Image (cartoon, rainbow, N blue to C red; front, side, top):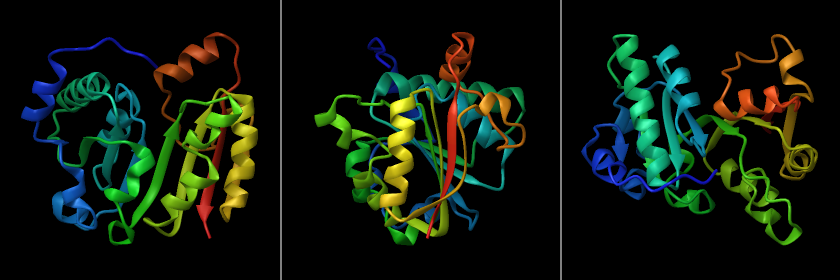
Amino acid sequence: MRIRFKAWARPELEASDFYIDNPEEYKGKWKDLFNNNNPIHLELGCGKGNFISQLAVKNENINYIAIDLVDAMLGLAKRNIESVYEEQNKEINNVYLTRYDIERILNILNKEDNIERIYINFCNPWPRGKHRKKRLTHTRQLEKYKEFLSKNGEVYFKTDDDGLFNDSINYFKEAGFEIIDKTFELENTPNFWNNIMTEHEKMFMEQGINIKALKARKM
């Protein structure tokens, strides 16, 4: 998603207590930052933060790291998190935002971080052949995630794009993940997971597009 430059985003992020501008310094030490032993879950491409804000506020016993590459997106995510936590009268102490290129994710996470779950929601499908290696679910990327996922760590993935979903099923198998479950109609699959509807998801469903989803486990 393209978004207009927001001059306020960078200053607000730099002033925020839950934004990390130097994530390389926390490689292998994210638990120290959270200062507890709760499991850590990761969202790749958090966008405006609608998903992570609702997820984190409901699960105070889980720590969350949300990554995006665009300051404007992260600025909106920061504001969304603040708004949701304020509505619930809760302190923001289990989520951190950071700006980073996900293709270089092994510079900021390793096996010591023991990430238990990754969420990938409506990532860029990169449909053109030569660009497909940029997909967040491509075999090349999944191999990187295995480096910091815990034993039996999971990936939760959903998309509107048929081609991306079908290819991703093969990517997960190629990378040695077990696909626990999958659906081609998330909206008609009760109890598939405790789903939080994203802004994209609502838009696609209103257009009559089925949402595809899968759960995969590191073997």
